[in-house]
Length: 139
Image 1 (tube, one colour):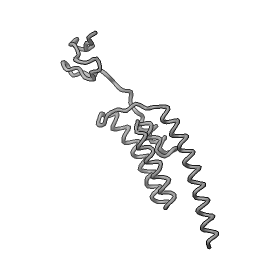
Image 2 (cartoon, one colour):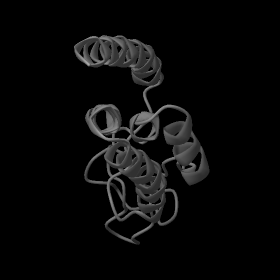
Image 3 (spheres, one colour):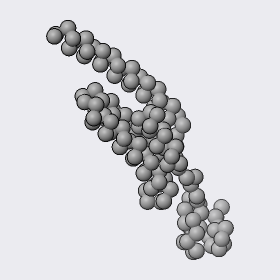
Image 4 (cartoon, helix red, strand yellow):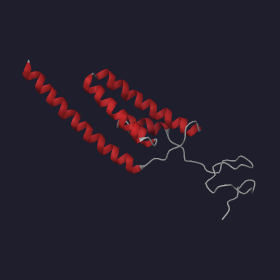
């Protein structure tokens, strides 16, 4: 069954076409990402803003960078944390402006990421406690 442009009536080459080749009108409109929500997600759970923006791998890297940086030295972890907030905000704005491809938010990925986040924080505190016990027993 052929698809037609609702604006000019031209037949579309593909039913999945995003722009009409005849008049140039955008046929598919994606819902916009909220840059504020993306930044808030990354502020509450480091890396969750990236998952909200459709980049779960990048979110995991931000998460790991934050906690490894906090474990090694506090300043690098804070730098990665702040970068994660900025990156989530900027990526959502760039998606809305059409500068980068829009990626859907996957709620399951967000839930799994929060579970991973709590597990990672628990592991972080266990390792920190072991390191502190080792340091204080040596000295």
